[in-house]
Amino acid sequence: MSPPPNELYSAFSFIGFVLCAIPLYWHLQAWNTGTCLFMIWTGLGCLLQCINSIVWNKNMTNRAPVYCDISTRIQVAQNVAIPASSLCINRRLYKIATAKAAMTTNADKRRVVIQDLLIGVGLPILQIIFQYVVSTNRYDIFEDFGPVFAIVVTPLSFILFYAWPVVIGTVSLFYCVRSIYTFYKRQRQFSQIMVHSQGLKRGRYLRLMALSGTEIIGTIPLGTYFIVNNAKGGVTPWQGWAYTHSHYSDVVQVPSSVWKNNPSTSGGMETFRWSLVACAFIFFAFFGFADEARQHYRRAYTSIASRIGFSTFTHHGSSDA
Image (tube, rainbow, N blue to C red; front, side, top):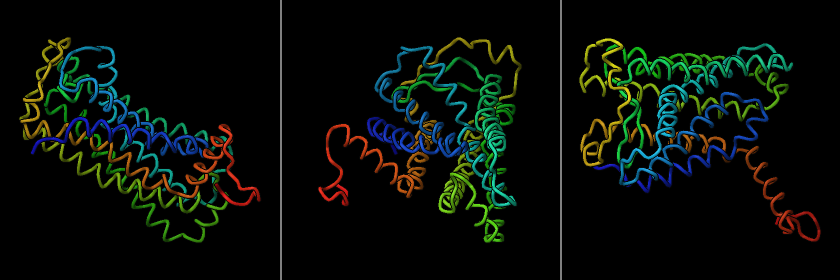
């Protein structure tokens, strides 16, 4: 089965980027660090893969080396970025579910934000550093796909790269299960905390729980799939730093006729980029139609309409236009 047309992915990935950008502003206002990180990493991934699918459509020219370096490093970071963002969400939900009082001081909020940033940004940066250890060359360019990070499949690669999403997803699953259990056990006390919790009400809490649960359901099986898929392709012994990086400056160019006819390579690459689009659509499904979202849409409509001189009220001033 051949992959979907490249133009189709370009369209859907751009829509995914827009869907992540729309609710970002009001989630920043609510100090929802984990949710913001989820949107930023997902939206950034959709945007970069959209650009790549357009620029390298029907070609594999090494036309922008610096951009390729940046794009592939972000790809490496995304190996753990979205699972780490989900972990931040689940940690916060668990702390709220088990708390005896809501966070009220700015110092408490800053501490939570710092902890979330250490997880949601620190782990992706650490992943970039670790991936460099097992990278064979600067990057590869696949026709119709764009630049891709290069990695040698050795036992060390599974420890430094492939196992991370499964480990993070498992920790996130622990917090998720504990949050659900505690939520139903302490509903009355939870409701009292929600009254004093700025930016996080019961409906948003449940949607965050559903989002993080859905992400976990995808992360652990997908992470396991990539581990098994790469192990089946053959594992070579680690032969040392000098041997692995002896041709690091090389850029390998792969035509679509080669990688698209390899089920293992094609399946892994298409799964990676379409999973970003899926995350964007799933997030918007949970938060793009909520009450707070509709309120922001209404305010944006009113602001734009007033700027162009279009009245949003009838002469009686009581009906929406």
